[in-house]
Amino acid sequence: MLVPLILLSCSSRDELVCRDCSLILISIDTLRADHLGCYGYDRPTSPNIDALAERAVRFANATSPSFRTAESHMSMFTGVYPSVHGVMTALDRSGRKTRVPDAIPVVTETLRRAGFTTAAFTGGGNVGPAFGFNRGMDTYDSVDEPSWRKTFERARAFVRTTSERYFLFIHTYHVHDPYLPDPPWRDAFDPGYAGNIEADRAALVGSQGADYWLAHDRFWARVDGRLAADVRHLAALYDGEIREVDDEIGSLLAASQPARTVVVLTSDHGEQFGEHGGFLHDHIYEELTHVPLLIAGPTIPRGRTIEPRVSLVGLAPTLLDLLGIQSDPAAAYQVASLVPVVRGAAGPDAIFSERPDELAALIWDGKKLIVPLAGRPAPLQLFDLASDPSEKHDVGQRAPYAAAMRARFAEIALSNRALRERLVPPGAQQPAVLDDATQQQLRGLGYLR
Image (cartoon, rainbow, N blue to C red):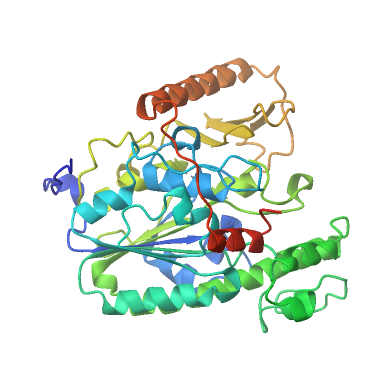
């Protein structure tokens, strides 16, 4: 049965609400916050995003729900942690692949019932229909990564031609590896590099250009992570891709109507460039979970920075609050809307991130506990983020606060398990069925070997 939706009542507390606005949600996959100018980066990677930040609220310490794409995005869309919604990124052919259960509402369904025209233009793959990302969408469209600019072209056309109040989700993998920016950005940030890394897609795949996924393996085969010059060049190529995406974002925002549009820009996780000995995104350290979060709109304070840590699990109720729409009564949001934080309230008491069966992390009272789960045997790690924000010194389990951190972590994990059991009966979660197009997209991103 459809639940009728009503507008939130007017009060002096809802001055941030824009009742006649549309909303654009931009997710730049694999974008770490500290490679943007508005987060202090010294390279000119993001002039258009920086301009957006000047008229936005910038969350200085936003944390992603996971270091994987499907888990993180579905938490943004449902307001529950990954172990509750159960959606898992497809990493290979044998791993568990599941679709979000019907019992868990998706925010786009709420928006469509409230009268919004809803559309998604994405890179597909781990944000594809197989996992449930088309739920509540009037239009769902995806393109393979080599054609990533078409995502923005179609989104611009949608913005220009849609007269109704709309919700637009735009997502791109272009910042994802292999890092293959076109000239001039291929060489712009490391012009003197003389090593073996090849960043020209045509040179990597030759006449096998149709099998573009080969670029992933061939790109990394020429990288020596022990060489400082190679590590610097990887980051420079990554920055070049950020700049390319930034140009497209500038064009998209120019096509929108700022006086009638709320814009939210974020990412699902970051990327490693040798920190903690790693590359890509296969851990839960800060370089992988600290993501950008900007919110701009006609009712949003301009140029304000929010320092308290927040979680993107709170994004779904935040979107509804910004638009003046009541949540679906069936929603079980585990993190409250961020709108009160913009008004000056404290952030969440605890920040929790996870890749179920692999790794989870709790940030609480300035400390961070990393817990390997069943599928990833390793010791626990504990960091004091106030004195060690780069997580270089594990303070060990004998620290005076270690027992309290473990107990708080266990409390959240138990709460997640209980909510999962309440919302999703055994056997109710269906497998994700990957069609040929989705499998091709995933191969192109280095998955499904």
